[in-house]
Image (cartoon, rainbow, N blue to C red):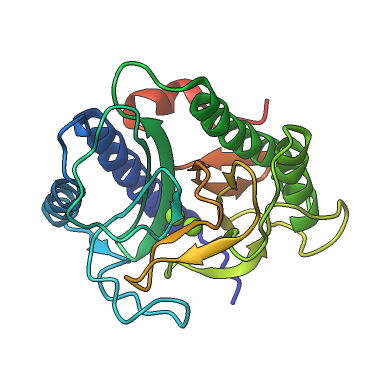
Length: 268
Ligand code: MG
Ligand code: MG
C-alpha cells in the first residue's frame, strides 16, 4: 500500500518526526563507556511513553524475525548493523553504535537511525563508514521530490556507497511510512535512474543507507533478530523520514533545534 498524507496528517508526521529525533539524540548524548544496551532500551521506553506515543517495535513480528521484538529500540553495535536486539552488553571505548527507532504518534509513524562511536578517540575507518552512510542519505534526500522516481533516489544513494568502495546489500532498504512503519514503495540502496514509482507530494519515505565494510552478506544472531556482517567487519546505518513536498523533500526527523535552520527544502 502507498499512502499519501493529507496536510493535517503531514502536520502530525512532523510532530512524530521531531519526537523520534529528540529521543535518538538524547540517547546519543547519554550513551557512553559503561552504558548498558538495556539502559538505552529502558530510556527509550520512558521517553516514548511520556510523549504518549506507541512503539512500532515491541509487538513487531515479521516473517524475518523471531516472534515479537519485545523492545523499544534497535541497538546494533560494531559488526551488528540492523535489528539489533537490546541485550545485556556494556559499551566500551570505541564501540560503533547504531540506534534505530520508529514510533507512532497521533496515528502517524516516523522512523530514523543514527550511528556514532562511543568514547573520545573513534577509529578513522569507523568515522569514514558513518560518514558514507550520512552522505548517501543526504544524496538520496537531495534528489527526492515530486519529479523523481524511486530509482532516482536509489541510484543517488547507491552511487555514494559504491564510489566509496562499499558493497551494497539489497535485502533491506528504505520504505514508505504512514499509518504503519513499513509500506510501499521499497527504496533499495542502489537502483536505476528513471525507473519505478513516481514520488508524489504527501508521500512519506524512510531512506536508510547502511553498509558493512567489506561484505554484502548478513548473518543472523542466535537471538533471531540481530543482523551482523558475515565477515565480522564494522558497519554503519543512517536513516531519516522525509515528506515529499511540492518542491522537494522535507526532513521530518531532525532534532528540534536544527529544524528551523534546515527549512522546508533540504535539497537546496
Ligand atoms: Mg529504522
Ligand atoms: Mg526504516
